[in-house]
Length: 192
Ligand code: ADP
Image (cartoon, rainbow, N blue to C red; front, top):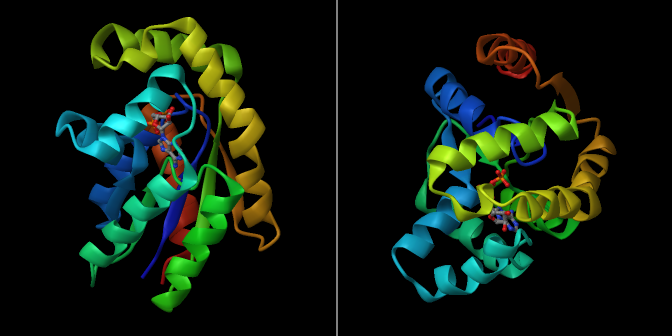
């Protein structure tokens, strides 16, 4: 299996690039944001609890997302690999993911970290808010709060993987194709 983390702040293009990467490499896409939004639209109790955090731009508690990922790993035996998008977002999530993968004798192959400036992020998220129907995208205060949560809690996740030399920075500004080509080049160097 080849397991990949696509990392970066909100609005850095993880969702867009994930779609292209899973098509090229046949990976199973696990986006905690998508999984949470699906729980909300199905009006599950998990979704209702998560919505309160998401609407404020805060992270959902670790145990909730870790449980979701654990189930998703179990539900997809025999895949070519997983592409984690929007997860892990805290050091505790990163440690939990390592343990879950270890139980399956698997590990993370690489973390690809998209670099985008804050002004560009806010611009992209506000633009996405015009069409995405996502309530957390059309309020600048909520967007700023998501970026603050990223800086306070999520940025450290890159340090966690850095200790194992698994982090590669990729420029996240440019055309979608340019960024995709850069990501693929890094994956191709590592995939067997
Ligand atoms: P974006 O990358 O644009 O922030 P996501 O769809 O990844 O969008 O996440 C939307 C929201 O879902 C986050 O602001 C957060 O509240 C919640 N969320 C998603 N993934 C996680 C996670 N791994 N841990 C905690 N909260 C999460």
